[in-house]
Length: 422
Image 1 (tube, rainbow, N blue to C red):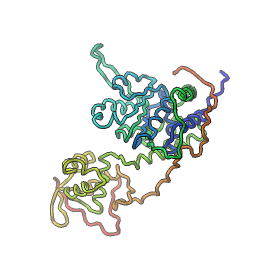
Image 2 (cartoon, one colour):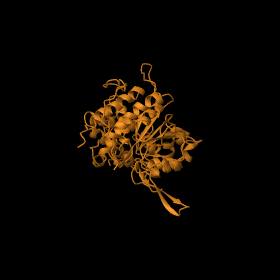
Image 3 (cartoon, one colour):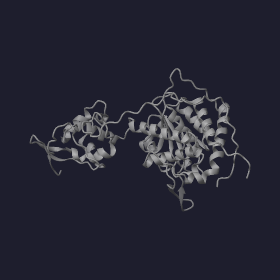
Image 4 (cartoon, rainbow, N blue to C red):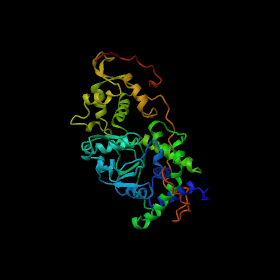
């Protein structure tokens, strides 16, 4: 018995949140709570089976993404920040108690001409989301196989979307430029970072003694699959703190995953499935030439930019092949026969990958749900402003030990056209 009082997790998370909104205006209170829990989770990385990424993206410059990364750097566990580092150097910076990787200006790393030259870094970030996914290298000098660990939490800030494979493993924060009435305190590294590092020390003192308990934690997750893997460490921290934080975590995952589902940057092939569904309308089959005409003729779709003639039949076939969708020789009701696509070939993919409640889609049979209310615009709603003080926390420093769609317009559906193999 040491006689020292236990660390107050709620007080520490509240102090971190108050410090965060002092320097940055985030898009919603839920986004703020997600960042707070992500930062806290970096201090217990040895306990997690997955290392969630934090993607801080903005549509334009001067939206606060770099300032947010500054605060993350000051409060996370063992920050390793870089703008341009070799993948080999990053590999060798990761150990059993990994640093927190911070990548600023990541749009210059993964965009334009740099995209092809940084595939190794993207591979590292993708593999490092899950424990026990090392990179294998052959050491010519020692004539032996070298296993390079990749597991580490990482935050990336940049303009525009990150690669899909990274955002799929991330808590995504969509920053916005401040309104004239939204003010923040200026951040000065020399003056303000020491105070923020005190919060980092308190986070470590609170979470590090309980790594074993955190490793065993199995919080009930409101999401599934990879989203559950990504958010589980944040939920474990929230439940470990107690108080209002479990509810805040649930609201955060609800709002941020809904934003991701409704975002404009769905993958190219999912976008193609959605546009094909709109092109079909109530038709049971379309000639390939007609489908391409509808796709390339949509001024808001990207297909006309796929080349001098827009999306071609060959490229369309390549994009649809992985979904098991193939063209066939189809005899149409007017007696003509042409290469085309049957509606039935798409129904499985539409059911699996596309939202069923598109109100503009006449083929959707599931009624649309009410839209979610927009979250408050101020990141400070419901929280007192920070006065610069932090509730004292006794430091503790132990060593690490399928459904088919059908036309529902009230009329009888005509029989499907005859299909002969291509």
